[in-house]
Image 1 (cartoon, helix red, strand yellow):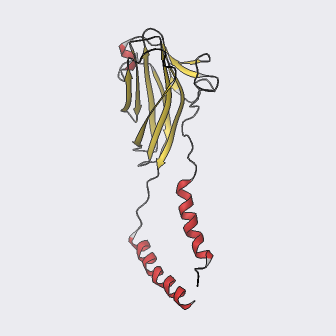
Image 2: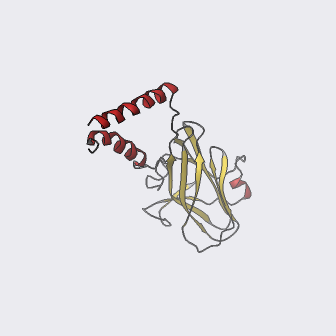
Image 3: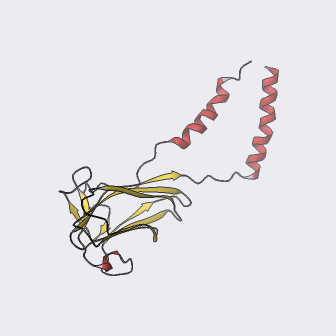
Length: 192
């Protein structure tokens, strides 16, 4: 005799929940609301964009622009709501206009997770990112530092998605309860 369908419902719900849609936790990652949501000394641009009508731009022209400890750094920063132990992926588009020297550095919670330097001019917006970024707390700071001595570095369509949610370890009592219930389910099946 087949298993009653109501027994399959909890399994289906459990399997469906981990695949729920993931939302971008970056506020205004496309810079459509100018630079709202970001702490920065960059500017908002409406002529060179990847998508939408705006991008962020840094015209800083000095090696100190990408030094995280320099008071002259060119920064674009946002505190993101994260889950301690959660794993995240970062995606963004960069356009270095004007030639070299140029640089972009990206920090996740103060740790350098992406760096590029002396990208040739004329490539347009190129997608970059970093994966397997682990949050150590309920807030993680995302920081971009940019430099382009001859002209400007443009940034657009920044997104951070949670890749994995830390799973709680079941307490011993829960494991014992489930272990005791399984034989009972099999005995119901045999009687039917």
